[in-house]
Amino acid sequence: MRFLVFLFFLLGMAGPVWSAGMGESSTHAGHGHGAGYQLLLATDPATVEAGKPVRLDLVLKDDFGSAVTELEVVHEKKLHLFVIRQGLDVFAHLHPEMDAAGVMSMGLVFPVGGTYLVYADFKPQNAEGMTLMAKVQVAGDAPAAPPLQPHVPGRVQTADLLADISVQKSYGRRQIGFTLSGLDGSPVADLEPYLGAMGHLVVVSADGHTFVHAHPVTGAKPSEVVFDVHFPGPGVYKGWGQFQRSGKVHEVGFVVDVSGN
Image (cartoon, rainbow, N blue to C red; front, side):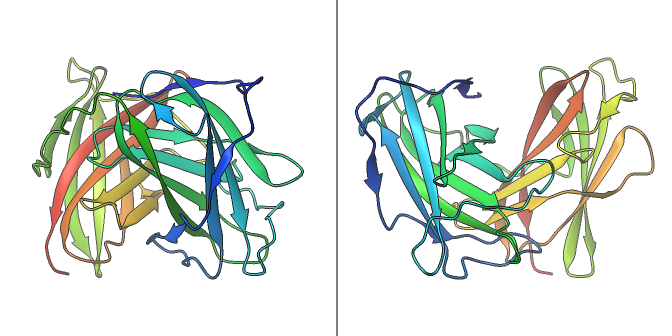
């Protein structure tokens, strides 16, 4: 299930109510941690309901308490925002724009109720990249998420693709490989760069406390994309691979159980 995302700002509403102190650092493969930065998140209206439009406003504060107004471009965007329901059954990868005051806003509709984890992945100027996390509580019907049952290495089928996913140990990390085929079994030969790479991979631990955003390192065939991923610890993780064909981004979700190094 995906969000229905509005590509315009929601105007004519009362001012947002800011939630202070909601930012917390999350693990990001190959990058730094919070380092004194804070993520502030507000919604307009203050009470968020499933199926109804809401404006999401975010501000990054540095260790001096000042709003961050300049970020470096990483993979074609200054901010990569990931909104994931706590049960890891709803996923969206978004890119709100920053205004002169440092406020990043966008309108969206949450499909179902529940607690949503909002991960802001960014790189301040002259600093290491990092990921901060906040939460949004959404009222409304909140069906239970399917249990996280590990099923890779193995094959995953989406509405448009077959993905044979491999997991191999490599110097304390894991290489996660995607071999992509059409539903008829023919190898995919038309992958396009998506945000400056042939794919993106996001992995989140079952409890939501660990977040990893990885990019491809190799691929021996046009239909193959391999990611080098550092898992901070053992456990069950949900992942989403993103690949573009003919201008459309395809998501491949999977669950993996990571044992010791």
